[in-house]
Length: 246
Image (cartoon, rainbow, N blue to C red; front, side):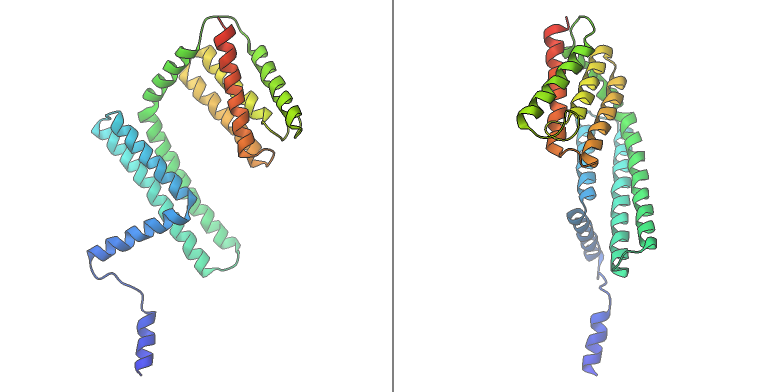
C-alpha cells in the first residue's frame, strides 16, 4: 500500500505552492526556450537593441510604449510556438503530417507578430534611419559623371582574378568570393550615391541582401564567401566614387 501511494504521488504533476514559485517556474520556461531555440535568442537581441535605441533617441512615451508592446508580442508568440513544438515532439516521437502542419501554423503566428513589430519599428525609427543614411551618403558622394559600367567591370574583373588565384569556383558560380554578392552590393551603393535617397538605398539594399542570401541558401557559396564578395563590391564602389567621381 505504501509503495502504491508513493507511485501515485510521483505521478502527480508539479504545482507551484505560491506566487514566487509560479514566477520562478515561468522564468525557467523562458530560459529553457532561449537556451534551446536559436530564433528566441535572435528575438531577444533584437528586442534589447530596439529598447536601447528607443532610450538613446529619447522617444516619446507613446512611441516607447508601442515599441515595448511590439517586442512583447513577438517574444510571447515565439515562446508559445516553442511550447507547441515541445508538446508535439513529446506526443509524437515520429514525423506526422498533422504535427508538421500545426508547427507551421504556430510558426506563422510568430511571423505575423514579427511583421507587425517590424511595421511599428519602421514607422517610429524610419525618420532617424533616413537621416543617418543621408548623412552617410553625403559624406561619401562627390560631384562628377556617371560611371556604373566602370564600377561593375572592376568588381567583375577583381572577382575573377581572386578566383583564378585561389583556383576554386567559376566566375559567377561558387568559390571565393561570391560574384553575385559583389555585383549586387556594388549596385546598391551606386544607387545610394547617385540618388542620395534613403528609401531607394534601403530598397536596393534589401534586394542585394536577398541576392546574397540566395547564394548561401542554395549552397553555392559559404557565408564567408558571400560576406567577402559583399565587402569587395562595397569597397571597390566607394573607392572608385571617392577617387574618380568628381
